[in-house]
Figure (cartoon, rainbow, N blue to C red):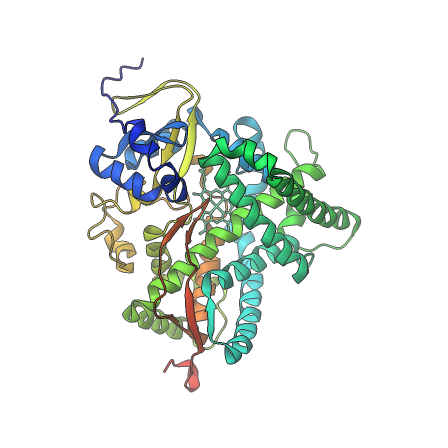
Length: 461
Ligand code: HEM
């Protein structure tokens, strides 16, 4: 029986109305303010939607794990994101989600990922060779853009092997960026829909979605007709069979799951890597430790699967980067039935925002939360951290399926890039947050990139 007794603190609607556009552009300062003044659970309005915002690890664990069956993805994820990406792991719920998760999970087991490591290293090495030629001509570039290109290439190869050539790759990248803008507008300012429809924008986004459909369906059709094995994720998706029926996925299901893996699987890692390069450029002592670790573990070798556990400091830098700049900065859910957490009532149908960014910056769990300090993630220092005080990949049954893929990929990219190049922030570059579906640096990260001079034996000088 539910016996909720506490009243949720509340931000009155008028406090949000007069700055509705500011909040739509970047809700983080508003959510931080609410947390500071009202505590780690409160209600508010985001656009026309009443929401419960929480950054309390115990409440978050309740929602994502302990009572996860009572919480489904919100309408925005299901309907808006779902209409663009399709009905795949990220956007579905209930029995169908469980069926799909069971089918797809084996593709992300560690031993299966070990086979994808060579794809990650080969793409990263090719990328470094191209970057070497590029920076010889022009050292200035936006590392966010570069990391988007690299992680997109990696996930494309892991999924489709060679099926997307460079032109198609650029086109799909462009389309995904545009569709994301649409999803965000619909999430924060749904009242703009009639205007978007009248101005032809909805038709434009529809045409983009159809274009990606044609590309992805084309790849699936071609693959079904071919006899040869590719050993990539698409082969795994095509060949997997439902336990109950023994049948495989149809083309629509394959399209939807592929689109979701491409989108979920590249932008998150790209943001984390761009933020990491920015932070490292501001902390030469961290860079030095990274270089020493890479020299000790790898010498002159390309990283192999077995090296990854030994690139421990590299992993800590990535973890600390995702604490300060969690690429998935918020998670949303809808309550299916009335529930209660720590004496607070959570009414049926209400929207919950799990404010990852807020938890990761809370002084309750992090000493000097704004300071970049990868040592926080040493085994010794992690001992006392409460569950869900750090959850960049979500948690419970819907934990990110690609978490190990992403961590391996980021270790490889960071270790390889830093051994070959130096990155320095361009003077006057403003670094600001742009929380879209993922947390991007608003103006990119403009850097000067130079080839690092290596002494013989792989020592950095
Ligand atoms: C730094 C990189 C990444 C971050 C921070 C990240 C974060 C997340 C988070 C927070 C969720 C849970 C969302 C929720 O509960 O509502 C999630 C789910 C998911 N992620 Fe990731 N992700 C990353 C990389 C990847 C990669 C590389 C892939 C695939 C190749 C991927 C595929 C997915 C999928 C399919 C889901 C839905 C899983 C389900 O609900 O069963 N992600 N991710």
